[in-house]
Image 1 (tube, rainbow, N blue to C red):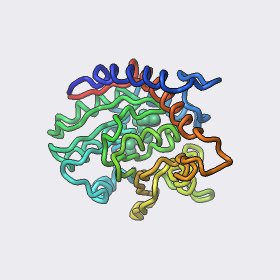
Image 2: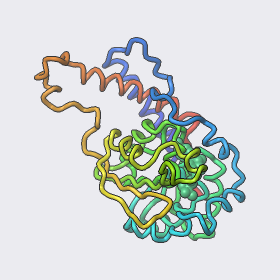
Image 3: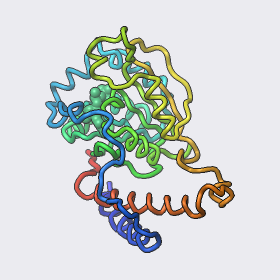
Length: 293
Ligand SMILES: C[S@@+](CC[C@H](N)C(=O)[O-])C[C@H]1O[C@@H](n2cnc3c(N)ncnc32)[C@H](O)[C@@H]1O
């Protein structure tokens, strides 16, 4: 595969320069700053994956008794993947779903295994040989960015990982960017019911189905429904909305809302572009890597 960072770097530099020329700088904003949201959960949640022992995690993620492992074939079937589709398994872990997706979408499809732990990516790519699949691409993301290219995927799949997102807003924005128009997001995560869920779930999983749904809808996704065959987990589907959630109605953009100074929206978009370009420029250099086998 052509190395994406090199190809994109020039484009990003030019975009950044153009944006800086065309738009005023944002007073008080540091374009190199991290996500604007406070962390939803501390870094301890991902500490065990910093230098993971692949074999050990294979045993933890892929064993009888873990519901998403026991029901893996039913989960994949419920997604209705078509040959040729492009899927991102975000927080791919040991590749439990990545490898099944790779078979489901076939040689004309592609599966991006997105991880923040490079060891997991290396292990997944090693496993593709046993599975006889050549359509898996490892993507080393960051805690607030999938590292996926814009409009590059049909489905984003997030299993047992949403509660590991330290910056869920930024991750959802990154997922929305990566989805093609009409693309879908599927999230599976532990049921967290006060009084019913185990003390481990209560302590480990920060939010239940209702709160997660609110967060995903606030990020601009439209709920499509849920699968109800899992006992310990919920399984929700969303579609990427056609319009960004922060977009005001057209009337406001055309200056018909007297409470909003004309140009505010355009200025905000320019500011966002500058920040986005600067952050993507910084991000792609040391952190994002596309890895193929
Ligand atoms: C509990 S594991 C789930 C693995 C796999 N989805 C499964 O169900 O077997 C969560 C994974 O999410 C990854 N992760 C955490 N935050 C992430 C982020 N912002 N982007 C990508 N991966 C992330 C962790 O490294 C870890 O491998």
